[in-house]
Image 1 (cartoon, one colour):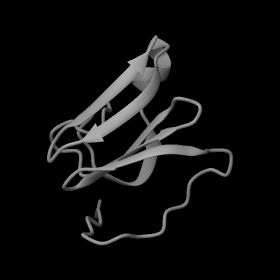
Image 2 (cartoon, one colour):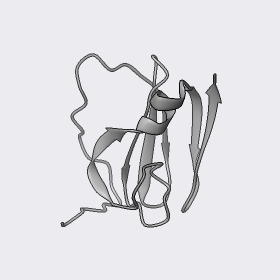
Image 3 (tube, rainbow, N blue to C red):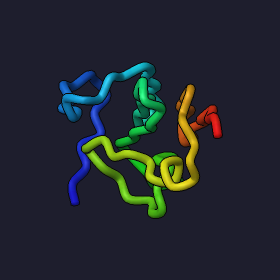
Image 4 (cartoon, rainbow, N blue to C red):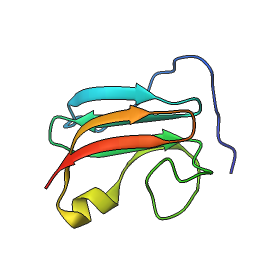
Length: 90
């Protein structure tokens, strides 16, 4: 599948009930934390920086299910070049 990795801002459609609390951008991926403590990621995922079970890249934001399954709430996110750091609460 073709993934559009762009070096400039682009409009993004999120579900209407999501309120974004924080955004962080890496070199080829982006992450947001919602006011409800969910983490969404998208972009290039080759090194697992999207926090999903696979290393697939995605143009569309997808919720990081692991945090939901484990009962964690994301509080803060910082994206590095090929990494994503998330501060969570249990």
